Length: 179
Ligand code: NI
Image: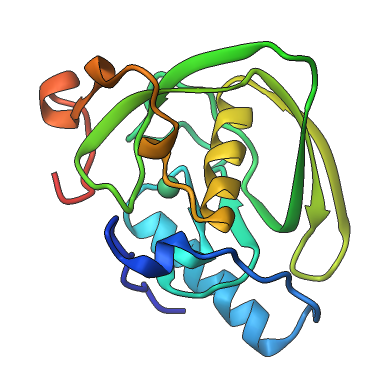
């Protein structure tokens, strides 16, 4: 396993439409997933998408199983490898919440997201995943899947008075992503 370099906003590779995965449980896919898991763990990420390490495939990982030090006030949710995801909003209720991104180090913003979603896809072995999620779990899934369509969270911000540096907004927060 290898900790990979995370691309930062401004890199055009973050703006592409990612391609679907067509073969599962291959050495290449398993290595990609292992590298993503190790990379996310190394920086305490809540999630990571393959385009963030320059791989243009529809692969995201998220969750930790424990409370994340970058988001200490948010609940834990299960570590998941989600491939070829499809998100369906459940209802039209939105939630606003703080987000950061490993590709936008040192910053946070209030971002509107669907409150409740269903997400489907497969894992690295091709086994179906079909879940409902709400709150922070739903937020992270929407954030990660946005990376697969070339969207970074600043593109979703509506109120730019709620966009700033983590060190100013949340002094003392354990955010070690270049802050
Ligand atoms: Ni991100």
